[in-house]
Image (cartoon, rainbow, N blue to C red; front, top):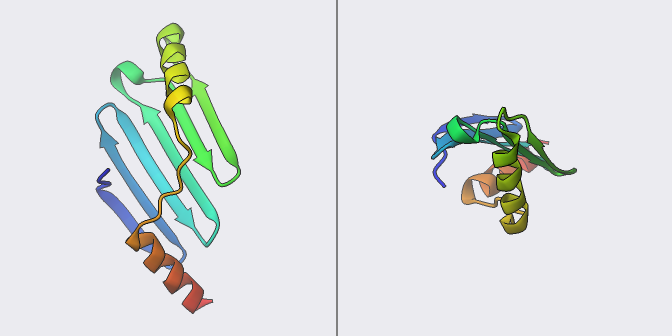
Length: 100
């Protein structure tokens, strides 16, 4: 996955992009705070997923709830918990540790 919009600050990394019909947003803040958000657009509008270091939530805010409910069931069945570790994140952790 290639995330285009990137923000690097002293204690946080942010990435966001639209891929197919979904908006992706990833935030790392400090050493242990992690947020992954996926929001559907177009035909998937109303599908809202968020995963943090504290848990996961799925919501259906669609005007066509049956379609999104079916999609959510498929998503839950196939979703594998992730923790994205990349060289960028490793460098971020090293710089965070060195500054504190």
